[in-house]
Figure 1 (cartoon, rainbow, N blue to C red):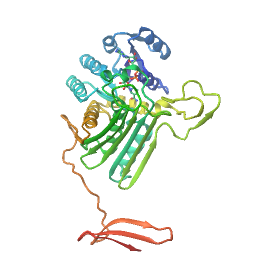
Figure 2: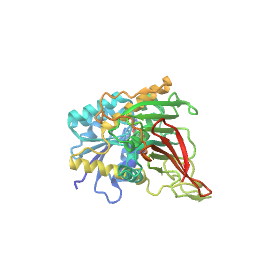
Figure 3: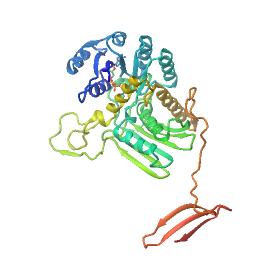
Figure 4: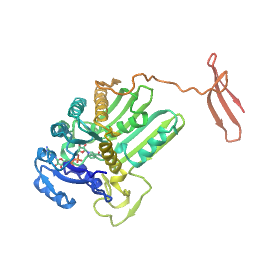
Length: 398
Ligand SMILES: NC(=O)c1ccc[n+]([C@@H]2O[C@H](COP(=O)([O-])OP(=O)(O)OC[C@H]3O[C@@H](n4cnc5c(N)ncnc54)[C@H](O)[C@@H]3O)[C@@H](O)[C@H]2O)c1
């Protein structure tokens, strides 16, 4: 295992979480250079995390001859510029979510890294949480049958820096910031080679004094008939609610990642200033998180990225995936305006094109399909059947 020497772009919340994950648990990987606009902030973070170099020049940080991978943790409007510099420097690049502010930007980033022939990873941590990885493996082994419906929710009281609230810089509101996670989580469960076809989205600005949406719900329909539902909010009170639900023809998975994970504390005196990301209180009933960077998937995500660099393979999440997510979000913004189902415009699609919607019919006998078996409280058992010929629905006690 080769040591990864990292250039970290950005010293905000995600730069901090990434550095904590990269330096955690006796890791041999090290952030060697950080870029911050602020000399003071760069210096402070370098001292705190034992980072040998810091600079106020993004270009100098990317071109540091000692580093072999660049991590982009900058506001959304700077991702393209940073990727352009990495492509020029021919250095492996990992970019946080969302990849672009829209699909056009994301497509350009994909073109740049592919033409430069550099490694690229999309840092979609919530696809890598230990719970998600376990659920994905279970589902891929067939435990839930055919996946029919995925519901993914990320809601919190709103982001922590000015630029998120400026849609020129961020590209939108809660959809671009949080919907990107939910959309990619669902895509993983439904199958990445299944094409997202069309979307229906409601978005509104209910609380915050901004133009962009602070609340949205969307439906993404896939070629095989599966539906993905996302629920996002910047005006939800009470902390950060991250929940997923996967429903298949043979079973269900429900995951609570953050708010109510079985770790509940009551304190009348308080628990210091910080409890967990976006928690609104540190007194009373609170919900701490055991190991935040691990719970949020950062460790498994970087492990996949660095293993993939060494094995010269594509990671689970690449810039291509980031581009697909941006294309779905573009269609969501359009649908929220037109109030109609809108097609996902995919100029680039590398998955299957032969998948059609399929109905699942359970054969009961030569003449009937099974609709439902029911055990009644008094011990009787009923079977509801559909006649193949004529389609009549009948029931009988067995
Ligand atoms: N779970 C996740 O994957 C996750 C979580 C949070 C943020 N993010 C993403 O990380 C990126 C950064 O978000 P954040 O939460 O760290 O934001 P932040 O505001 O906490 O930090 C942003 C960093 O960029 C710097 N910066 C801001 N404007 C700049 C400019 N014009 N030029 C140069 N530097 C500038 C800031 O000084 C700071 O170091 C965003 O793309 C965001 O979507 C991802």
